[in-house]
Length: 104
Image (tube, rainbow, N blue to C red):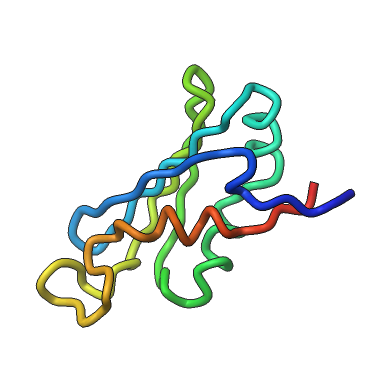
């Protein structure tokens, strides 16, 4: 077993709808997609954000494009014009997630 940064095996994009942040994680190979499915859970994603995501995180698998999608509820402190956060639209969530280290 060892540690690997998510950035080494995937890319990501994120955005918002109200107070929900959506993070797409795309593996750079079939083998790495299988690692994502096995090791990148909704619980790990929520824990990585250390309290920023207050609601449920739901993981969806999209095998045909070797991607996972995480829908993070109550993640933007109200979102858009309501939030006092630097990233009110969730655009930086993907960059932050790519710093996550996975035990593989």
